[in-house]
Length: 164
Length: 180
Image 1: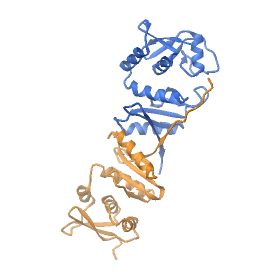
Image 2: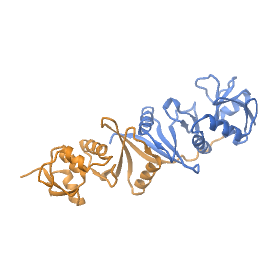
Image 3: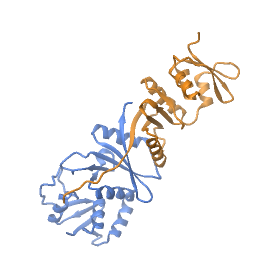
């Protein structure tokens, strides 16, 4: 019996052929009803999946990533792999650079060393996540793919009464 | 009390020692060439104010700036600061916002930040916060976040990004290095 997951790529979408529940990503897929390219790339990377193209030919990670990536894909993938290595139950989020650890109510936004972050956008991400009841973490990926995490929170400075 | 301060470069110098001491006890300025002064002591030396402190005191009606040898208005001083210091406006907005709330702001240069922020005051505690000031409509290099985040962690301070919008409203985001 195939212990790896099997996916098929058809018209730029990913079809699930089989996904054994011994694999964490497959259990997430069962709950969510869809697979994300990041999860497929991770399973390919860890040899837990085979991906077939339209001609039933096995795709390599390189071929898969070339077909499904966006500008944030590799850094978000690096962060996904880093978190999975640490045993975190992470899932892809709605945005290209967003990951979610649901059991810790954490949203992780991935940025790259030297690629500027727009402050307005950062504020919006923090505001929205906090409103939804999540804590926010920024993951900064360096030039070699190493990840550093910073928890971000809004704060206010309460007035201090001073005796003058 | 109305202090005369001679503006030289990016400093305002108070030569009246008594008034300088009076200001220093309220955490404005620093006695010249004294490494770690204590506000409960008196110093017989000129006092050095930052331009932020000078403008703040001027706007409170407590300081007269002397620019190019003659008395100037607060607007003159503000104009001078803008020309001299890039990003002065947003930094001053933050300075004023926190000073009005009772916090003491000193240079954050040694921590790679704009300000070190005290709750009790320098000389009585280590600054609990370091602050980097940005405009809401600008972009920031993630390395700046890493820099203040790491420094803040190593010197046990909270690293804060002060975000100033076009209306002068300030939001604060605190960053904490986590291992996840």
